[in-house]
Structures are given as structure tokens and as C-alpha cells.
Length: 189
Ligand code: HEC
Image 1: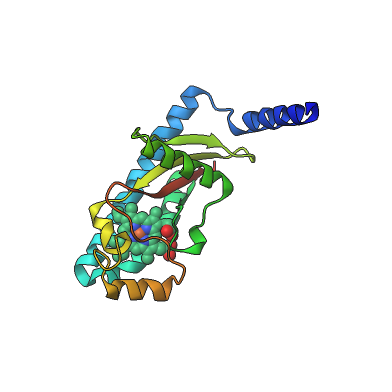
Image 2: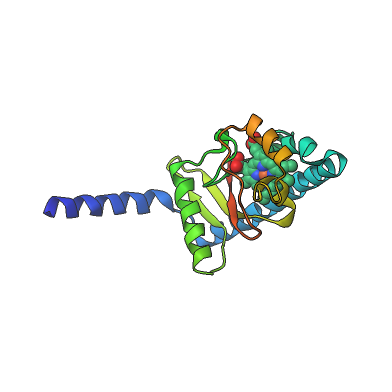
């Protein structure tokens, strides 16, 4: 029993030490930068997606909900020295599956939403000393055609294209305002 107590003390000590060594000022600066990058990414991704939706519906737009499908990731990496990942508790592409840390962040946002509280970005250092900016991604009306309810907003045609590309797709059934996932921006400087 004593041993267990000591062990949990060490675990708490180690995790609290390694997770956060940023000052409030540094945190605020990273949050501002993260928000700016997040906005720029959403704008680029969103406009490309809508352009393709208008031109050829979900069939043409499907490849464009992928941050890595465009030069966008590279552009952001060059401009801001960051890498961008989107992940979720209900993923479409296995490549986007969450790490243990990302799972904790997603859980935190899900609990916060269920309490009706506001979701805020999170800045944290990882064990390697790199800073990460995490922010929630909420579902909007324009996302429904590919992430809404199958048979309602997601037509059976779209569903069959999605199933062919992503046989283990978990990313349907969302409603407007639901937590779709999170963005994880890693600062590489
Ligand atoms: C035209 C169809 C389409 C629309 C519209 C769409 N998505 Fe997606 N979404 C996809 C596809 C396809 C993927 C898988 C991309 C990949 O292979 O990385 C995806 C993946 C994602 C992911 C990455 C996590 C995962 O499940 O793999 C997030 C987050 C996401 N979408 C959010 C959104 C949001 C938010 C909107 C609305 C602003 C939106 N999507 C609109 C088709 C779409």
C-alpha cells in the first residue's frame, strides 16, 4: 500500500514535470500563432472543398478533405515551421488515428461539451520538448454531405464512394455542433 502511494506520487511528479514548462506569456504567444495557422488552414481547405463540391459534388470533393492531399501541409511547414495533423475519436482514414495524448485531449473536449462549457485551445510540451497546439474541430453545415447521417445528408452514392475508399469509416452520423475531432499543430522550431 505504501509502495503504491509512493509510485503514484512519482508518476504524478514525472508527468507534471515533463508536460508543461511554458510560461503564461509563452503559452499565450503559441495560442495566438496556433489560432492564426488554424484559421489559415481551415480557409484554404474549406475553399478548395467548396469549390470542388460546386463543381462535381462529394464525388469530386472527397479527396480534398485531406490536409495532406494538397500542398497545404508543406506550405504551412515552410511558412510557420509547423506540422499539422487532424484526428478524431471517430476517424475516417486510419492514418489519422489518435495518439494516447491526442485521445486524452479529445476526451477532455467531449466532457467539456457535455457540460455545456466553452472549448478552448490547449498548448502543451511533449516529452521531446516540442510544443503542440490543440484545438477542437466542430461540425458545420457544409460538412454534413460527407460526415452527416447516412441516408439523410450523406446520400447512398456518397456513402458507397466513402466505403470503397475507407472500409473502416467511422466518421459519419455527426450533427452540426458536434465535436468532429481536433487539430494538433506541432511547432518544429
Ligand atoms: C466532400 C466530402 C467531405 C466534406 C464536405 C468534408 N469532409 Fe472531412 N473528410 C472527408 C474525407 C474523404 C476524409 C478522409 C481524408 C483523409 O484521407 O485523410 C475526411 C477527414 C476529415 C478529418 C480527419 C480525421 C479523419 O476522420 O480521418 C476531419 C477532422 C474532417 N474530415 C473534418 C471535416 C469538417 C470539419 C468538414 C466541414 C468543414 C468536413 N470534414 C467536410 C470528406 C469530407
